[in-house]
Length: 236
Ligand code: SF4
Image (cartoon, rainbow, N blue to C red; front, side, top):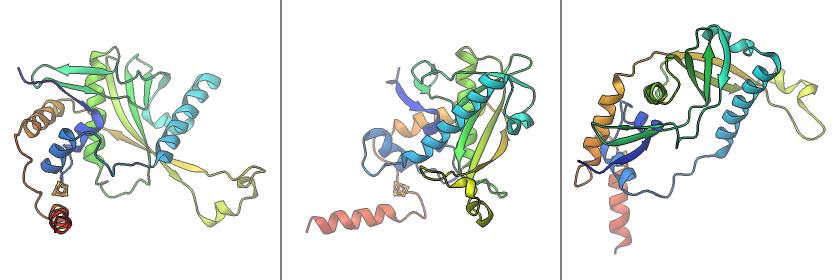
């Protein structure tokens, strides 16, 4: 039996990207606490703000905000559990998969729809990060089915984008006594349910993790070469 390893749904999602680098993944998994991984907290603050706005609207009006209506007949929401409770152990790979979805909506038939908020501009062209988000949401679906949210009937990304055009900056209402207001527009992107992809990704992660040495550098990425030159230079 291999040692169990724990990964987040988002980390699993990285393995679905077309430019996934097994070497990078191996290094990250085997050296927790690597430096240079600072992520600006403002994005998670905005995602959290959007989630609280939605829940507050439900609590006050008993219905979904109008911009969520395109997802169907939504009747309410459930508070997403902490990742320590929203996790499963995959017996095949001995991987503990966990995470915390941004939102879990309850549909008219009692099924659940999982949403994730992204503070980003939605582009008409294929979003390069979409394979990662797709896998992340489907990992939540697999976990949710086993952790009290069955059935999961849908998944969606909610892109929130700041509106910064000249007309908006010219509005007096956006300047307040204490600062300023920034408007956001939303774009809802339904994501197909494909839970059968998750076992494939878990197997890929297990295979990379179990290698005794870091895999070779990804073709086309020169950063490892730069690092090697830097280390040689520092050793002189
Ligand atoms: S090849 Fe590029 S992506 Fe892979 S480990 Fe090196 S720097 Fe990271």
